[in-house]
Image (spheres, rainbow, N blue to C red):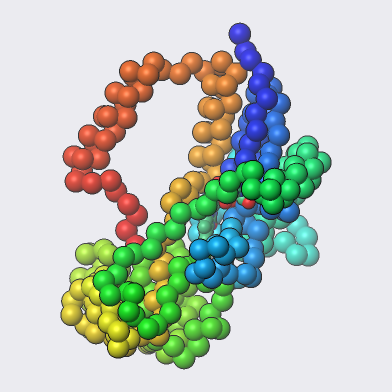
Length: 307
Ligand SMILES: Cc1cc2nc3c(=O)[nH]c(=O)nc-3n(C[C@H](O)[C@H](O)[C@H](O)COP(=O)(O)OP(=O)(O)OC[C@H]3O[C@@H](n4cnc5c(N)ncnc54)[C@H](O)[C@@H]3O)c2cc1C
């Protein structure tokens, strides 16, 4: 027999909104808790950045001002609410639209259906619970490479989470670590303003093609950083040495999940909670986990994305 449960969803980003919708459609009673004053999660742009102070105020969003989606809009919708181009003065109809369009779509496109009022109340409540220290915060984990000698390096270093626009890099020599989505986007902006951009990338294939010698305008490609020195220089694994002002870690984030995947996962969870879907036995699940680990081991290691 199907069960209807009371479910609390924490966070009103795309994942939380899709969860709330799937749970609601399954017949559960849902309350969404959001600590921000606005729904949309990552897609709520903030010009603020974080300091290095461990007691700093956290800035949730990692978006930079000019960010456009890095996958086409067709892959950023869910079944009932496809992310289709909308008519209107301020709408961005491009296939890879700006982050502002994604936020508009989350707010207007129906994903927040009848949650608006509940969210307003809950947001207010959450703010108080945070002030009282009752609800802990969840943080998106950012990958920062460990670099030998970094404690004594006099330059500035930041993660792409704290990158907002290229202006503060004007005239500087920048070492950019990682050349996946953020690295490619940000380096293209920096070309216009930075004095030199040195891109360190992991992939053996691409470093063979584009070694230290290959220079495009003010950009050069290198293998990974070996170490940094207190005189401000950065040493790459091929022995090349560069005197740099900034190291920008475009090294990605943990737990980034796509919209269609949210929908499948949340539909499944909603079905498990209502007894529509039966879980396998504990033994079967453990056997599956072990088989997965064995498969990873057979490939040498857990595969991370190659910046
Ligand atoms: C720079 C960047 C670019 C990206 N570009 C794309 C793209 O082009 N296409 C794409 O499909 N995906 C992209 N993504 C992936 C993106 O993370 C997902 O699209 C999606 O927005 C993630 O949704 P989420 O709900 O899991 O997390 P988030 O959007 O991060 O939402 C989490 C929400 O939870 C709230 N919250 C956190 N802790 C608490 C708490 N303790 N109590 C209450 N509320 C809490 C936060 O305030 C936030 O509103 C990108 C991610 C990044 C970082």
